[in-house]
Amino acid sequence: ILVDSEEKALDIKKEIDGGLSFEDAAKKYSSCPSKERGGDLGEFPRGSMVKEFENAAFSLPIGSVSSPVKTQFGYHLILVTKRKDDNVSSFEEVKTTIYNNLLQQKQSQVYFDKIEELKGIYNVEMK
Image 1 (cartoon, rainbow, N blue to C red):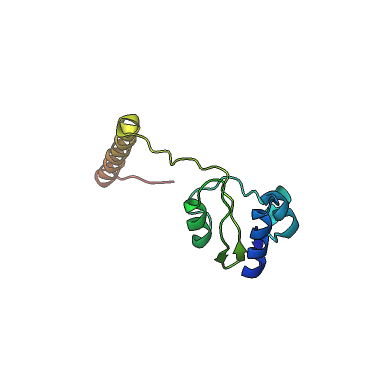
Image 2 (spheres, rainbow, N blue to C red):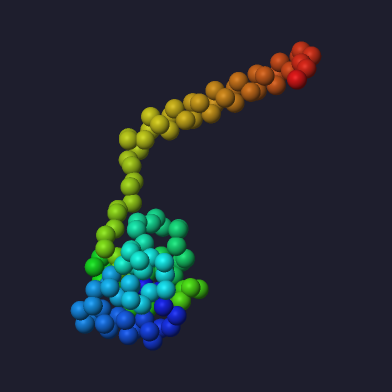
């Protein structure tokens, strides 16, 4: 939910704490285009939102509404409905991919080095 003042954000938070759903509050008060979807921004990864918003969203417990968060756009109320864990693969899962990528890079480098060597030996005209 995005509004232009901290006071308005606090008033809306009181209404939500009093039983108004976050979705209804977003539709009623938010100036963000997401208000049509009840304030739903969908999933987003780290690095895709402004710092203040992102810090609040990734530290907020699932299911609770934040206090007002000030950004360059105004004051936000944030509700995190779910969070995906960062997908971190083990070395064993990715070592074959890494090996193949490095092998391809090395083969390409050897190939291009050989081409440059042959260009130095033979008169090559590029058209």
